[in-house]
Image 1 (spheres, rainbow, N blue to C red):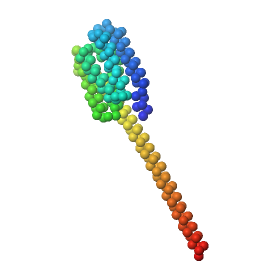
Image 2: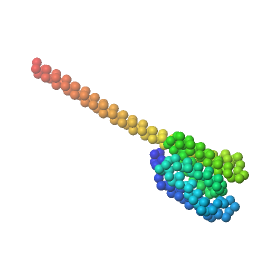
Image 3: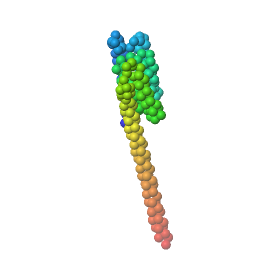
Image 4: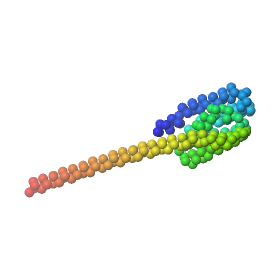
Length: 206
């Protein structure tokens, strides 16, 4: 389980995020003239996509950084609501951000992350003209499920680490008990030898 947490912090995730970044930019470039495409210029759209991804990359130094993804997503939705729904790859990035927030060690940060995971997508959906109540419920729910998955993994890792600590403590206690038993046995043998020698000396004297 510790290895799973380690892998989540390696460049494997960064490679995945880089691929999603490229895919999102290609989605926008290829579908630029479709009716649902973002209306803002590429000078805004492409940097906006990159900015949405950066918090995930910064997670190793700043574990709470993925929270910025949802704050930025909500802000971008006020500028161009079409951008985030248009690029499917950004949806996947959002799932990764939600998972990482659920996986945080700090329960307070994880709780704040959950609020952002619910509020961020709800804001993005709310800015879509003609959105439905079902969209407002089920789209944030999808990201909430990702958060729950991250939280569940965190709990399993914590339990595994606690079990390892208990096992190590028990091993140390067994070693200490064995050393004490050996020391006590040596003391007993020394006393018996002392008694035997003392008895032999007393017999010789007599």
